[in-house]
Image (cartoon, rainbow, N blue to C red; front, side, top):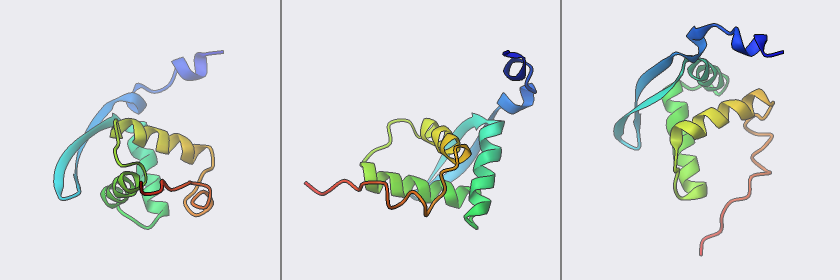
Length: 101
């Protein structure tokens, strides 16, 4: 049963660091190669570069949630949502925005 998962190419879970400018600051993000490939695909579908997509995602998450406790984890779950069929536009009406206190 687990052979599909256990036998996967180790290249897919190789850690890759990329430097990206977010909110005017250069930062390094470490993710597995598979997640970088998915983020590249998502960005391309949005007609954005991957750094621009990640920067916009960061800005919108800060606007909605006020803080991001673990941005790398958020990027991984973004990929999971994408694989489950969630796409920008179709979900935006369903995301409740926090109201100002």
